[in-house]
Image 1: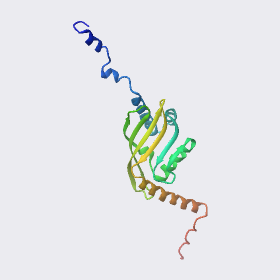
Image 2: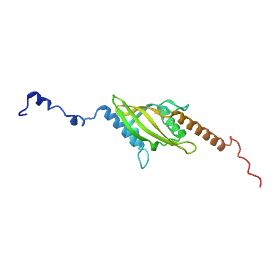
Image 3: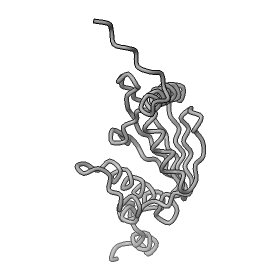
Length: 185
């Protein structure tokens, strides 16, 4: 470069900050996997994009911390039913999830800050923050740990709904208390 000191010319051949940003970091790639996963889960219209979800996940372990006796670590084939049971009992609406922020620094971990909502057994709406620790390895989600803002509320909603579903099932199969006799004319 004419008119430039040789040391300056050498510095000018290194990529600028903008040029470096065209090559995403591993943390950026991991956040992209998690972002694409939630976009597939929340796809509208038509509901979840299960093909993309399968492409992006290889979940070996999920930890659901929601205060209910079924809380805890679930592995392999038990993951789907455990997640479904939590959504059913808490009245959580997975399609109403709002991802507010994705944070990533290390080689595998992405932190998801989101808002979940649903309704209790009486139809009263609830909303709370959830933090998820998501591990991404080789471009696939391998582990998720969810931490809900108010596990006592979720536990109470779930136990009340569980009792109501038990009563409904008992009535449906005839093992529950008989319906009261109609009033006399």
